[in-house]
Image (cartoon, rainbow, N blue to C red; front, side):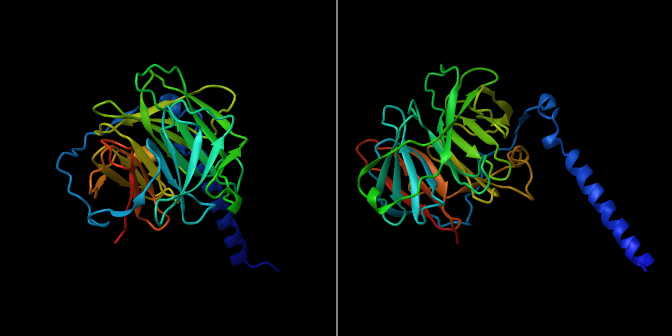
Amino acid sequence: MVSRLSISYFLLLQLLLIVACNAQIEDPAIDEDFWANYQAFDATYDLSEEPISNLFASSGKAIGHVSLQEASGLVASIKNDGMLWAHNDSGNPNVLFLIDKLDGNTIARYRLNGINNIDWEDIEIGPGPEDGEIYLYIGDIGDNNGQRPKVTVYRFAEPVFDESHRSVLTELYPEADRIRLVYPDRPRDAETLLLDPITKDIYVVSKREFRVGIYIAPYPQSTEEDNVLIKIGNIPVMFATGGNVSADGDHILIRTYNLIYYWKRENNENMWDTFQRKPIRLPYDPIEPQGEAICWSRNGGYYTLSELNAGIIPQLYFYERK
């Protein structure tokens, strides 16, 4: 015989499930009309006198020189422990570099056959269409003259290092998705690619405006047709040259030539809500000759890397979290 208490408990569970399902359905982030009615924000916070955070070491530790001359993208590998992925930008071959995070030495080079390097400017890593797989996202998004009618993000499974790859150029033929992006207003130069690992949305941050624009390509992105980017807002940052989202999606970095900004995501909120809050300024010392790349480490610190400039050989720096 079932007690009244058991029946009441069962009914309560059913009610909670119905409420949870309804809440999910009504979530504006997944409503089909949400983006059609979305209004881009214009962040008004003042960053001119933002103090430098003491969460991290006040100066970067010099790890070692890096052999890339025009380093533009940097991200911590997930499948290859202790290593970083890096690449050059326009005018260079379609080659990825696997770098030792302990000394900056290039461990291996991979030519990505079938993937063009018009102007690779940033790289991200994280989930994608196949559950359990880790993908690299290469942002061929540079456009110095603001003339490209569309730009491309290449998504493919992260390569796994083998000892036969050490110190040689390995030919890869990745099954890469081509995610073609079109701006909703006009072509723009961009050097910052962000991946939200929670939603798998792709973000592009423009570079040259006084208040850079942030654009989104919501998941799932089409690999057959052009994806028209949606502008989510402007932030008071100029010359954004790189960025990265942590593996858990809670920590966001955007850098310029001489500043680094950090946003803390709260309770898995939408990233466009996170960007509307004032960021924290992070330590950046020494200032690099032409700082382009930045990424989180797997333990919470962050790396920075510059292009070769004024004869100064690029140095990999690490800022440890206290």
